[in-house]
Length: 173
Image 1 (spheres, helix red, strand yellow):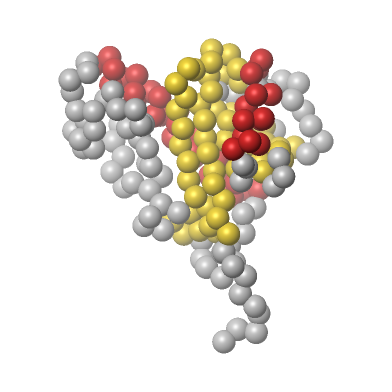
Image 2 (image 1 turned 120 degrees about the vertical axis):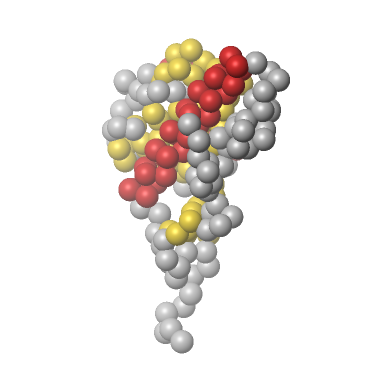
């Protein structure tokens, strides 16, 4: 047995939202900046926000009220706002006694959630949500009656056809 007390694992939700065609980040410089590209900073009680210039905001460990406050402050900076926002989310489990891994259920397990981990996962989610938007646009151009060959999902489905692609092995272009 270990002499160290085991610390309970905690789960953090990370959400990526495609808000528009672009987010103007100029003039948002702050003292608590974690990264400049993407612009990442602390927000809320224990949260982190990463803003990608191509229109994606990634919100880490924030309550819904904190998320809405951050999104509300970005209103004047969003170029080409999107009415029906794309969203991608993932659960991150911080467990010092476990190895870094991706579980079969799609939960990302890390020993410690460092700034580097946060930015890397945020980048993957931001890319995923942009690909989701592109895929949906392409599906709509093909016509409403066609189903995707691998997923069997209808292109007009409300949820993203790429939803959950961080845990799927069957990506398709």
